[in-house]
Amino acid sequence: MQIKPLRKDLEQFIKTRNLAGKWLKAKSLFENNLRHPSLHVELLEPRWHGIYSFRLDRKYRALFFITDDGRAEVFQITKHYKKK
Image 1 (cartoon, helix red, strand yellow):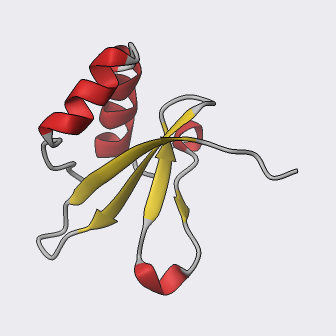
Image 2: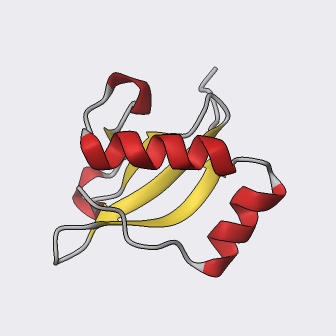
């Protein structure tokens, strides 16, 4: 599945946090096999929203949804939190 180009603010977020290499690796894995185990792709709650996430590293996750043309659009990159 192809990922749509990132918005400028997300590109800046990646750049300022030195995530460029991790982003490129995760993007490549995603586009070749979105079920790759290291991505940890998951459908978030509530499921009916259709929002998914995949892992850039242990700390950061990319949130995305599937557009009408069948591509993934990343709309946010966030710090991943752990439930206690």
